[in-house]
Image (cartoon, rainbow, N blue to C red; front, side, top):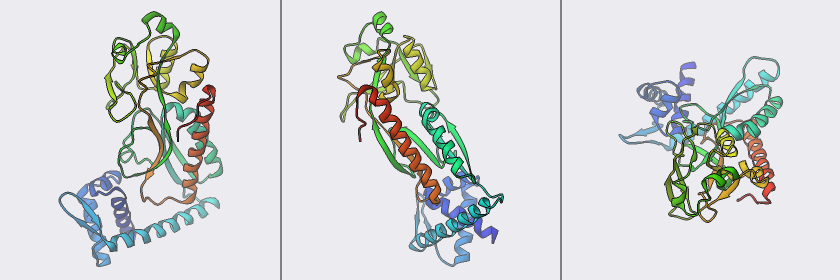
Length: 311
């Protein structure tokens, strides 16, 4: 029975990720082994669950029905584990959560800590990074993202559209001058968020369908957005930041926005979690907590400038 249970887990992950190879990678199996396990399951059940072609896989009607029943079974197992855990037993659920560094320190870490107090049976692995992690490869359960979102195997719960600004310290502007045009910005020191695969050295400026993508440069870069803010405050150059992160500095005059007629494109802040993966109610409770507390934090910061949060 344990072997069939493992076959079922491989099948469910393949359905969730839409790929044998992705399912195998997450479960640390080769694509061939993942495919073989599903074939054994199909032979046991006497029906085809997934049709395979050279380019894609498709879930059959029988496979869809079986997957839905599997979710019910896994939910029952989860409730059984939780009941044992509540009575002092060993089974525990581990959740992997990721978020950007700044927001993670100020909001997500506190929210996760409070959540774990209420759910002692859950262990949470929180990874904070301004890198865009491979959520599938890292086995992430819940991710708070602030970026241009692409189609993926993850369900997206949008928090808000995030307005961004380019800003610098009055001391830097006094020394280097106020840029009047987009071309002027190319002559200035720009503080860049840089890491392997980063696109932050190109700043998309101007709202609308055809924004201008400027390849800016400067003598300083880091993989931590908060470091860039500190450099900007110290007068080292201009920085591209979400408005809510620097609103209190702008309100106090420590930073000044520039090129307001050519604002950077907005980015979407959202919570991502694997599509169609079985999650118990208490995990969705954490998503609700993160959504509520993140919006509250953004609104509080924008209040420094009497700005409203875009929908």
